[in-house]
Length: 350
Ligand code: GLA
Image (spheres, rainbow, N blue to C red):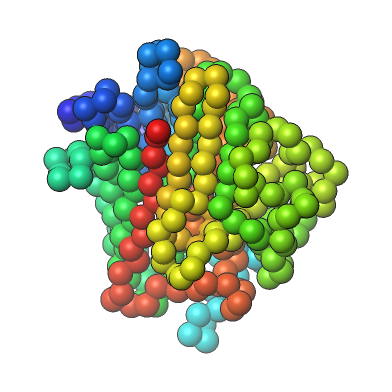
């Protein structure tokens, strides 16, 4: 089932719509045209109680004020670019240094702050909604007119699939992700540290004190970054380990174990044993930023007035590695003129 409603208006008076897609199992997600935000993901826990497992807000105003990217699509380049600078085809591009002089999630007017066009559909795999955004040449200072579409499809196997597509008329860089914060105990259940996570990666990209990748890979075995088997997120998050000290907890890019570039694999899992809700994350992208919500402060009231404090939700941001445009040893985020940026991430609830 697909329903459509008016969610509200931006401060400039632009209408924001919300779409709710429900599958045959009674699982649903809701997404809004502001930021292509996933605002709700509802499913039954093991006792049959309906839980909303993502953090979000009840008003457009709070999404406009938010600086934590709750549920949004971020871009043009998700995560960080060191010194907010990159070079492409001999040309130097200086971006907005919105994070300690580095560039984060597209800068001050990221895609998470735009009102996207939307169209719902009933498809073979499931029903869903496609969001579209046009990002003109030199928008956020990136080269190339970029036509973007992000499609959310909900299958009857409880897969929430995200298909990202983009085409530019000039060579550019592109790295789109979704910044949903999950708490499988429910968005209103407090800390997310009592959940088990697995990340299918033997290496994590080393970050410096400002979260810029150094180019070095850290073998996770024997460190608190080792999620190769399920581990309680809270178990080692406050260990005295230099990477955790820099990130104030987990906020790092794991280099996924892949046999070949573009292979779709199980990248991560998250499980709450109290509610019995488990999520699997699949992606064809090379990395995942596992971020433990270290900067949440509950400044704005969330859904039903709930305040989301530090570490009340965790993100699995599938992506090219941070600062990969400045690290030739990393998989390249360059999107050539006329070629299609095409990647898929699935959040599957089992
Ligand atoms: C990303 C970053 C974090 C933080 C959040 C937003 O996940 O890696 O450092 O900036 O976004 O609060």
